[in-house]
Amino acid sequence: MEPKDTGILLCAILDFLVDLQNKFLEEVMSIPPGTCRSLKFLDEPTFNVEQTVSSTSKIQPAKPNTPSGYYLQSMRIDHARSANIINFDWDDEILAYSQRNLAVAKGQDIIYDLTKIEAELANILVFEKVHIETQPESQLYLEPFPYHMELFQGCMRILSDIKNLITQEPIPADKMNLLGVTGISSSFMFPQESTLDNASEILSSLEILLCFVKRTAVRDKDISIKDYISKWVKLSSLSTHEGFARFLNIDLRLKHLVALYEFVEEQVANLKIKYIHDKYKAQLSTEMRNAIIKSVDFEQQTTTKEMISAEAFALALKRFMLRFLTLENQKEMEPLYVYLTDNSLNFWPSTIPEKRIEALFPEILLVANTYDAYDFTMRRIEQTMETINANNTMRQNNLGPRNPNIGQRTTPTSRQQRKPKGGSRYDIT
Image 1: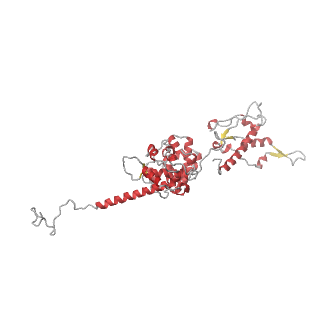
Image 2: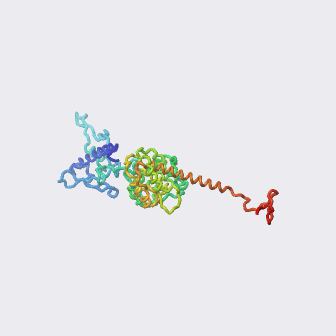
Image 3: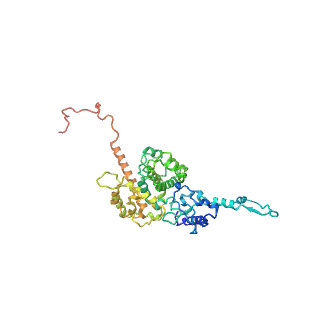
């Protein structure tokens, strides 16, 4: 949540509500200790320090000559429990602590037990309540969090952060089969409809999980994703999501988290990238196309000259479009290589050397040309595959089926006369 766009309204509402609670508690703290028996519980800490996430602070009363101060816990709102927040609606039942005046001619008068009512209100409004503090080095009460499809706008290098925390590994083939994928996914070569139901919602759940893993700084790569989620109440909603729960039953580990994210991301990208803004679909010039052909290996031949794999080039462009161009915030006239040669952004498969990308990526391309560069690359890949398949078919047809009689001795027929050893007299010499 950020103080911009529609987030301004959410921030304003939160500021107003937090200000109500903090000012009320500050006024309570101004009551001199010992003058209100209902606040006796504030004279010493009543909370469990070991279970407290943030440090405990002691807010001193307004009068400096008071011998002792009140203890009041300060806490960030994202660490608070419901019991720490004032949530009170007036209820006339609290006035039940009263009785009629039994004096003569005073029967209509009601005598309220103010001490009891005061104690009840103190218990409801003050006991276990906390003074809400802002985020460290910020004026916000909640740290900014990304909305769906905005993860890489605020956390560009989150996949690198996860890799630095937890050593990542590819998803084993047997588990990929359980995801409905045979062998290594090659959908970036031939875009197709999503093979996952609700892929976009699953990707949103994975974005939440990535942010939480980064925040908790867990380092055990062998913890199952299912067990990790079950330890945190804030992640409980993920296990109830039908599509995401399917992954939890495959026994994937935190070491598979990035690979899982990229797998689902690819399914979403196949549907989303065609709808990016037209300013990112500028046509390639002839010079740009030649630069791509010069740097990218479409023939898939083993040569001494190192080039960028065409499939990897297309995949990197696809990831960049989904992560950075779906929100239309990126400046289209920026050089594309600024982003695509930044290895910390994790656009490229791990099999492509970083030095090769830096040396060969076409510097002439702009962000505005991203989609057309991807489209051009995909069409060249398809043309190359069609040519290879046609050549293979032609080669097989030229060879033809093997004659079963080849290598066997045949008996000459009456129409097939053998020549004498000395040759025929009609032979021309």
